[in-house]
Length: 283
Image (tube, rainbow, N blue to C red):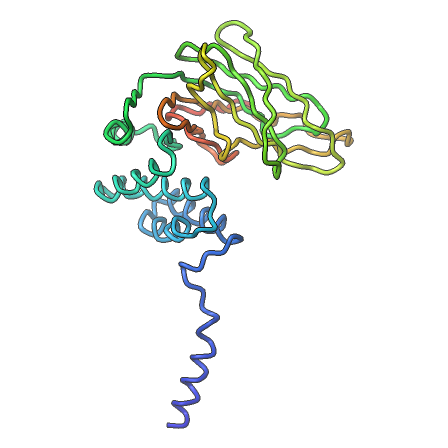
């Protein structure tokens, strides 16, 4: 009995050290997201759902983090043919952001039809054919204090104006710069990030507007921006502002809110949500 009592005491002392899935702290949220993404990519869909579920319940997770987790869960449920569960999860997404656009890169017409049909039922006056489609050649690196050129191509829709919103990571507000039409439905902007003796990340998103100034499409979003890793300004041997190009497709979003989906076949900047497309990578 004495031995059993000692064992019970040791177990009781060790219990607080056990970390449960529900105990997700702020520093662990990105870890859970990355783990869930890897499991999803490895087609371990049930394990991915289990890994991501705590993020959707944790009040310390950001809006963007919850949306990322919920979409992966919904996609995993859809792939597992759990239609009811997928619908419920997609409804949670639309409760958070009625204008949410899927970030899924599979291009599945069944998934697109499922999601659009759900939006028609839940969002008044939703029209998947409205708005505009955009393509964006995105830089992956640059140098502080040196110009960065951004190009956007309008592939569908009547776009009156295009703007790019930029900010240094950690800042609350964005600065807006207009893109200039260059013919062949291509628009360009040349921005110069603030000089810095230390590396930092420049966040940005692109917004298309109609003649009345209303947003009709986005690439990325204010809470889910694209990122450019900047080296210190003026440093020797700095890498060119691009290391490779890849095409990002932007889609229409006309509803109570506007979102964006980045279509990317490889890991890259964490994008917003836009309709699926094909990623083209060239040297």
